[in-house]
Image 1 (cartoon, rainbow, N blue to C red):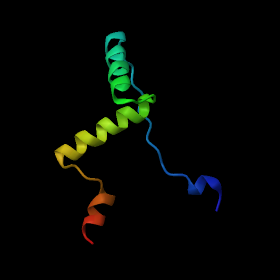
Image 2 (cartoon, rainbow, N blue to C red):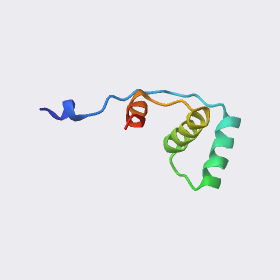
Image 3 (cartoon, one colour):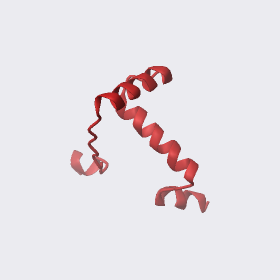
Amino acid sequence: MSTNDKQKERNVVQLRLDPELFERLSIAMKHDGDDNKVGWVKRLLRRELDQRGIKSSKQLKMDDF
C-alpha cells in the first residue's frame, strides 16, 4: 500500500474575505486564543452543524451501537 492510499480524502474550500470581515475574524480568533484561521473556522462549522443536529454518515453508524 502506498502512502497515497493511506491519506484521507480532503475537500478544499477557499474563502475570500473582505478587509472588514478579516479584521472581525482576527479579533474573534484572538479572543478565543486561536492562531490558526482554518482550525477556528472548522470549529465554528462543527459547532453550527452540531446545533442543527446534522450528523455525518460515520456518526450515524456509530449511533447504532
